[in-house]
Image 1 (tube, one colour):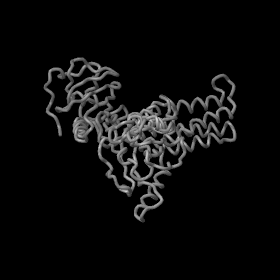
Image 2 (cartoon, one colour):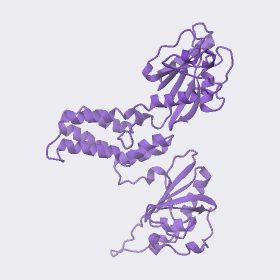
Image 3 (tube, rainbow, N blue to C red):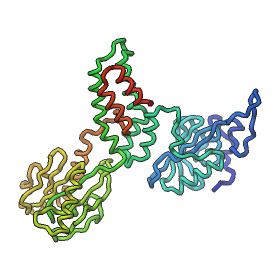
Image 4 (cartoon, rainbow, N blue to C red):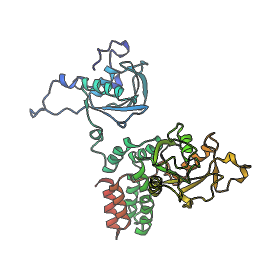
Length: 410
């Protein structure tokens, strides 16, 4: 798709802040080559555009455009609602062929276009930018090759994040949190700050702290696993339905209704969560139900949080590690008094929603107990984790510096 030439009087000429050389403003196919003094024809800087957000559906998509033709292309496609030129760091509202968009100028040759997150809207804008002389590239080719390896890796992880809360951790690394931390350790080992090198043991302790955060990097692009377990007919399926807000699991007043592990994805307090509804556990079960119980046990081994559900009629509760589990007494409305709810349990009534918000808050609290603080350095890849592990076990200053240097840019 290409757009007709802009007839908007607001945009009959480029603002001074967005002016580019005439040869650069022309689409690539119309550009006339010039020659250097030695008679050779230089390669003009390539103008590029790319989809910067993930490939899936989202509320908003972000397109990047840069290079000598970017400003002219933006002027051709974007109809802003104000007359003032776009300065660095500012945003402008407007439309692109009838699609509401927001454009921000990072600097004279770099822009971001924020549009609807559906594939069609982003594709139309990218096609137009290509027609206006801006080459479309893959996201991996967009990342500046001059950036250090550790920053490029963070750029590659960012689009795969599932929520803004987990993406914020990666964005901190894009902005250099882990790189700055590693450089400080190198400086301390070399004694660059005050001429006196820090003891290797002291730096090793700091490395261990950051290396221990590697589990966040490994899990940051996938949902956290929350598994509901307990005897049959205590309301596990009803609790899953109450949390996600729709009937994901079949519920019946018959023991053994759930025979397989059923999953439902949701977001709780900014954390991507995969809820797993499992078969009720009991000693006397038929062969098919027993297989479901085995599936439930397998799901328990990989859980980040176990929600152990019982009800007032349950004789025994499942014994699990309290650090990674939440005890829930469902059907609490059957109790004569709410004071009868055990101190270590949350009382819920899945059918009415009583106690469900508290259960969701408890799940989020368990998962984010050691959530990295804003701006904290966090390793994101196996390569980064390996470099940290080697630095933590280094025999001397020189070896530790080598592995930390490789961490930044191998």
